[in-house]
Amino acid sequence: MAIGSDDDEGQFFNSTGISHNVHFFFGMYCTIFPFIASTGNVIFVMVCISDREYRSLSSTQILLWSSCSQLLSCSFHSLGGIFALTSVEIPFIVNKICGALMAGNDTFQYALILLLALNRTIAVCSLHRFDLLFCPRNLKICLCLCMLDGAIFVAAYLLPWFNFTFDIHRLCWIDSGELIDYIISVDFCETMLKLLIAFGLYLIILLYLRIKKSIKSTFSERKVFFQSLFVILIPFLDFFAFYYTEFIGSGYFFVMASNVSWMFMLCVNPYIYIAVNRTLRQKYVMILHQICGMNQTKRFAPSASRLSKGEIYLKNILKTKVVPI
Image (cartoon, rainbow, N blue to C red):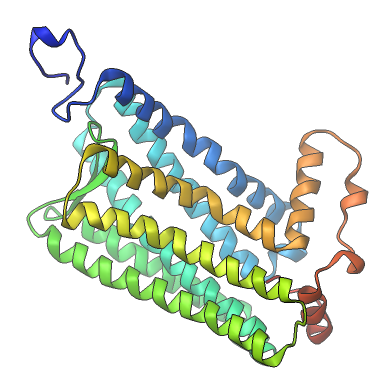
C-alpha cells in the first residue's frame, strides 16, 4: 500500500522513498525480463528433446536439468513482479511455498554448477575413466544428490522459523525469521565451497591442457578459461551481492542490482555454451530455422569438418561420440 501525506500527490510508493515511475519500471523489468531470459533455456530444452543422441550425453543431461531449474526461477521472479505491479500483497502461504521452492532451487543450481565442472574435468583429464564414472546409473545418483541438497533447503524454509519471501516494495526475495541467521550461514558456506571447488576444477582443466598440450590451439584453451570465468564468476557476483544485502544491508538500488544480477545469471549460461561449443551452436541455429519455417537446416548440420579441434581430439579418443567442452 502507498504511504505518505497528501502533499506527496502520490509521488512515492512506499517507505523506500522511490517514486511510482521508478518502482513501476523495476516492476515491469522483474515481470518481463525473466521471459526474455528464458529464451536460451527454452531453445536448449527444445534441442535436447529433438536430438536423442545429444540428450544422452551426461553433460547435456546436467545442462538440461539446469535449464529447467532456471526456467522455474524465472517464473517465480515474474510472479513477484506481477504482484509488485498490481500493488497487491502476496498471500503468506503462496509467498512461503514459492520462497521455499525458490531457495531450494537456487541451491540445486549451484550443485549442478559443481557437478558440471566435475563432469568436464573428468572428460578432459581422465577420458579412459569417463564412461565408468559418469555411466547413466552414476549420473542419476549424482543428480539425486543435487536434488536432495535442494530439497533440504525447501524443507527448512517451510518451517516457521525460516522465511524466504518476495518483498513487493523492494522488489526482491529476502530472508526473515527468528533463526534465519543460522540457515543463511549454512547456505553461505555451502555455496561458497561449491563455487570455489568448481572454479578449481576448471583451473585444473586449463592447466592440464597447457601442460599436456593435447589441444594445441591456444584458442581452445582460452575458450575453456573464459567458460570457467563466466560460469563461476557471474554466480559468485550474484552470490556476493545477495549476501552483502543480507549481512550488511543496503539501499533500494543495490538490492535491485542484486536481483537484476540474479536474473541475468539465469539467462547467461546457455549462451556461454553456445559461444564455446560449435556443435551446440549449430543445433541452436537448426532449431531457430525450424521455428522460423526456413528450409536451410541441412547447411548447418554438424559435420566432422566443422568440429572444433578440441572436439575432434575427444572424438578420436572416445571413438563413438563427442563430449562437448
